Amino acid sequence: MPESERIANQISSLCVGFINPRYTRSKLLTDPLYDGVYRELELSKLPLLDIGCGLGILAMYLRERGWMNPVSGFDYDGEKIKRGETMVSRGKYADISLEQGDARTGLPDHHGDVTILDIMQFFNEDEQTALLAEAVKRVAPNGRLIIRSGLKERNARFFVTWLVDVFAKCMLWMKAAPIHYPTAEFFQRVLESQGFKVEIRPFWGGTPFNNYMILASRLE
Ligand SMILES: C[S@@+](CC[C@H](N)C(=O)[O-])C[C@H]1O[C@@H](n2cnc3c(N)ncnc32)[C@H](O)[C@@H]1O
Image 1 (cartoon, rainbow, N blue to C red):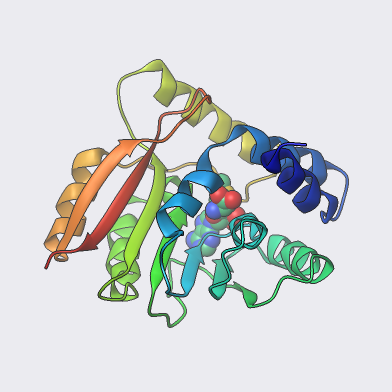
Image 2: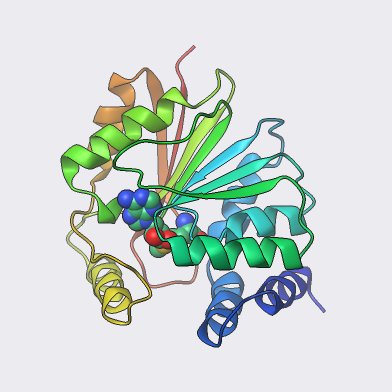
């Protein structure tokens, strides 16, 4: 059995409830997100803060790939945090903590790498600016801020991204509907003003979404 399938089976088998196992397995098998983030973090020795962690799938995925640095997940959806904690304990994963909190009103203390994956669209532009400012404060000198976000562009991929986010809200999988999609120029402007250099690359793999990876590291 391919390693990707073993990991998808393992993590989805830990899920609580009926929909989550199927959704989680299919997401792990089809979305390049977790493997892509793992490749960026692979050589890091720093702890990770995952803002908007949901169930904490990234943390569990990293453990399955043998990445053992401490991971703190932070999400405002208390139900997901509870389910995620059950999964972490069922999987006997060490050094993963999940905390409930609203990223619009503050972030946990942290010094290391930071991820923000697929949550920017739930914030308005001022909140996005404030979130990035708070996130970069938590990036260690040799660490990085790793973001995945749909970018606002005039193309069919962007339309599909928006449609699926609205659908997720209608299905109650997300507590909120998308409010505002950032542009590449926004990330460049805000992160460079904080003393970071920015690299942006397509990150949709085989999916129909307009997702990009935004990598920010401190200017030397
Ligand atoms: C599309 S999910 C992504 C989950 C996870 N990052 C992943 O990729 O597996 C977006 C997550 O952002 C969380 N979220 C949205 N607004 C938030 C906020 N203001 N503070 C903390 N988490 C938030 C949602 O609860 C949801 O779990």
